[in-house]
Image 1 (cartoon, one colour):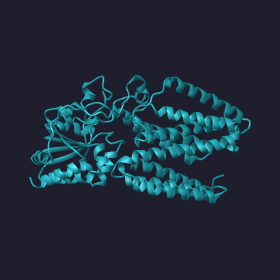
Image 2: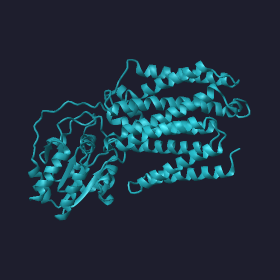
Image 3: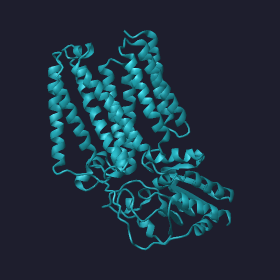
Image 4: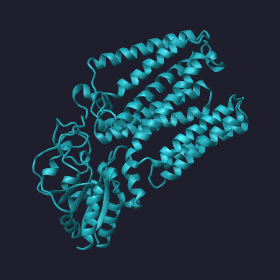
Length: 470
């Protein structure tokens, strides 16, 4: 029986998780929200160690120490451009941990699981343990594949296997069959080790085949979906272990991950089914890297500085290229110089700019860009027709008019920033390579558009220097 003081502490920890989610909904409160969530997790761990009848506490503390030694330096040193990869790894670890706990419970059933196998409870704890193992293993292997794609350890293009849909369906059927067999055997109190191992192998294979057909631009959406999977696995694990806090925390993660996945899919203007399985019909983003040799109008930093310096309204559109170049501080310096000259400056933030929602917000907040200058797509699109210059720094697909004009395009229907409605457009690009969608952006060839080629940070630095002398 859990002591009353421990139950109160669990309630406080659960409240911390809820407050943390609310805080993470805005860049202004995200740091505090993160700290509150971490405090809640720390409180939960301490209560478990103090209130539970736990053996091998030394091993547990040692494992926590190893995790801290490995995790803290990585989290502190990771670049913002690599944050999605880190999220994928952390999510995979969570799913893997849930799967391991479920596997242990299935091979060495405790009282909760054994009683769950009886008719009085309908076998729900036993079924929850099997679901935890399957979903946790799928999340683990799928997250590793998303990490490999984002880190470019493998191709970012969809990987299609001959007969992929049939193999995937067969794996699902086999997983269900083995899961039922494990449940029937475990209902008698037996620990079917080979059945559990088979279930683990099948689930890991499911996770890999689940993610392989997804193209590079869609991988962040899959990370969010796998995060929801991990939350569901943790919640089911909480039911198996009769731990209310795990149940609450997992449900929060599962629900928020599901909401985020739906929001990201809506921002891409595509259904989740199309994102996950569109490659089989040729509808998923392919991530082409072929460079165009069509002529464009290029400009030098001095020309851009003059155009910006005499403008009345400028909207800066940051993208992944800005993150890669770590140019957030220089672009903020440019915005400050323009503001001193009386130019109205703001930033247009697309929901999926960068590689994760909020990526650009966090990056620009790091450079102390005022929050009120960060405008979401819904509020900024109406301002482009009266904008003198739209300065696009490292973005491509999120400003590509093909999303509105080309029905056969992979991004057709995706809501975009209406940069093409501005009076003039300046692109800062490394090269003429397309974005993750693998298609050309016709706006690059528009008569109102000029391009500055080179590293975004270097180009912005030169524009800032030129602007100071204008």
